[in-house]
Length: 174
Image 1 (cartoon, one colour):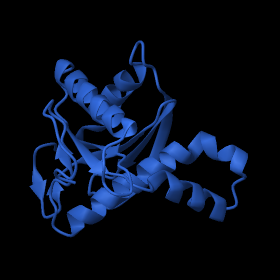
Image 2 (cartoon, helix red, strand yellow; image 1 turned 45 degrees about the vertical axis):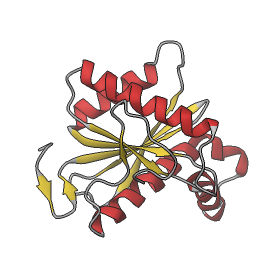
Image 3 (cartoon, one colour; image 1 turned 180 degrees about the horizontal axis):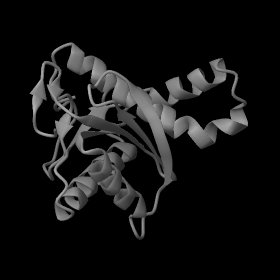
Image 4 (cartoon, helix red, strand yellow; image 1 turned 180 degrees about the vertical axis):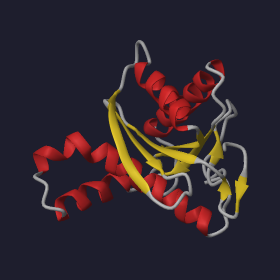
């Protein structure tokens, strides 16, 4: 049930979200927070925000407790245009969840190198490079969520930064 706590943090399904300019990768955990699996890749919809609507629907259907949006930073930990885009997306998602009366916390977590790691994993699995685009965002979302699950197993109950409209500076909370 969302809101309950366990030794590894808030109980319930978790979502991992990898936000890009063109696509959004989505992954989900099992209810016990042991394993992250790919769910789908959404097309970014800057005009109608249908991708955010799909995430709100997924969160409601799966009774999601927390959603972790990847926060891309430069290798030195600095802010980039992609960092701002991810913060804005997380804020918009949190607002959409609230308007829909879906209780799920949205948090931002450092995601440096997840897309690089996702491409490497797909290459090592023998998937042709031209076919990576269809699934790389899901694999990156799995990596983001798997990182969160590991952090929770190591005692960080709510990794990352809460996306509640506040402004964060470089290095805050991840």
